[in-house]
Image (cartoon, rainbow, N blue to C red):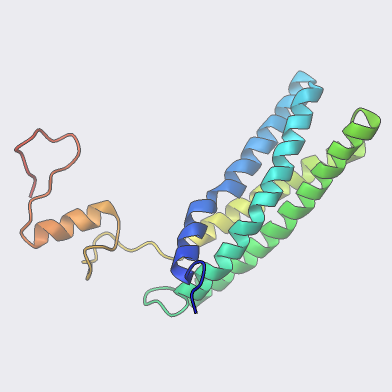
Length: 189
């Protein structure tokens, strides 16, 4: 039966998307803090919008992570314990981000109805955004530990690994590798 995407494609999607929640939360928190320093209501509204959008964007990141887990569960060199630890941290980060997004949405609703969010809303959002950022960064760090091959270990397949590993493998097989910035006609061994 044809599928829209196989698990490997969704795992790659997860690798592409997983930076958005962390970076977006940093951006939202930065704008939020700047809005207090400058006492600027427009920046407050923009930061609330950023938190809400990042909350929406976190859903596909989390769901693609579930697919990545299914794709990697039987791969050699991948620790099931590392995946489980990352998944638990990611679930907590996801829940906190969704709560943060809901509080941001409430603040946006208050701006529309009352002309400005309540102090309670802003204080709650400040605490939640700091805690969410800390947990999000922790989950991201744990995810980075799941699969990063040792660059000193020889590769079995030239199509796998990072660029340095592929160049080293090509040189080991007797191929010349031209590195970026190398004058034409010069090859490195």
